[in-house]
Image 1: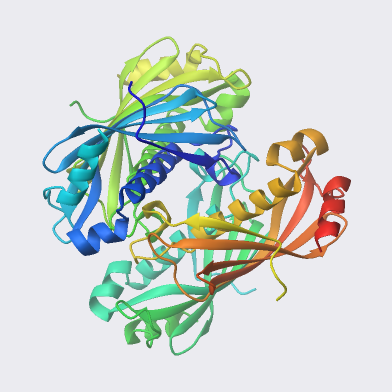
Image 2: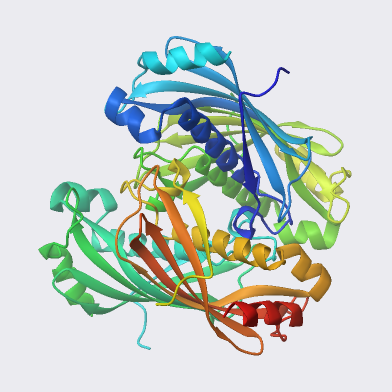
Length: 136
Length: 136
Length: 136
Length: 136
């Protein structure tokens, strides 16, 4: 897998764990979302700027996630983002959650850009498409 | 404390617990919210009907919560609702979380009715005020 | 897809939604977990009985989830469970989240039975295997 | 109120918001927890070091929280921690959530140090007591 476009450090707190002593499986999706929005912020876009300037928001259409090793309390994780495909209204991302370079979780996320009111697919905002094109 | 107006059974799953092996403290607020909305539903109101018919939603202004005993995986909790004060736009509720009649958590919740767009206090919808008056 | 083995009603509250006005994507995994544990309960097993009687717990190895339509506030969802494959230590489940028979979400969940202390794969508890065999 | 002992920046994502368009009330407790554990980390303690070196963990006994203004998507919040009382096994903390120096939320949190297995109150670990004494 080629190098990630972006990586976000995420600390594990009690709120992220469950009685099995590990990070709850759905909480990893929260970590992945944080990394995606910080990556967008680095490209110059926020959740609100997408809504206000482009009448657009991203919805997840589907995702596949694989849990290889558990994350635990106090871990300082690295959550990566890598664009793997860009369509007219869709983006596919490959994301990993790592602990000291060991892969704990990997996921492929299919997001679609939709209109704020309609929730129907719209073309990706051109400035975002240009930025994503540049970093690939 | 007088008898509760309403009680909702709530099961504890892994998603509700933390690595300490007990229900995460903030998750009890989720349980309390579920009971409040099922109580409203029993009175004939839903979150959406309040918005659509009365341009109103409830926000929490403040709350005090006391954790007496932990709740754990598989527990079937009872979450109660008792109205203790009704003002022009405010309602104070006393809520408990019980396991087989043993009190685990108690909370006093101060909610305020606000306009959907303004988020400013508005009078309680009259039909709701009448229902709450009846059950006191 | 053959009929589900089990279905759990789940109500949508504010806690389950996000600022997009719909159920947050990761929250659907919480709904799916609730249905899996209520299905296990119907078969005679709880999270704690698996730990105490069988030194076993279930971890999710991987999952694929597809979001077809959004769920919203006040929705009363049906969350289904269907066993599609049973291995020595693994179970594959197909789950759907429906609103009035319309599919909102579908997921394939690969779980593995692990020892409580080791978190290494162990054989499924025989009584559970027998129950699952019976219902297929 | 005297100056805080510690402050943590926290970004608001979709996962933190609800269909009312603001941060869900219980999620603020998650933000407060993150600040408490980063403050402990700055003092030289982690959740795991408290368990392993001192057989101790912190449970919340009670809390009061006041919501003055809503937090919204993309906000970069400051979450503060201030010790206001130290007892034999108890600590009282005053915490605020601020947006550009405007107070959104304030809370008083009563935590108790308990033994890991017993969950019964134990004396605060001496090294922690000394650190907290120093910063007051």
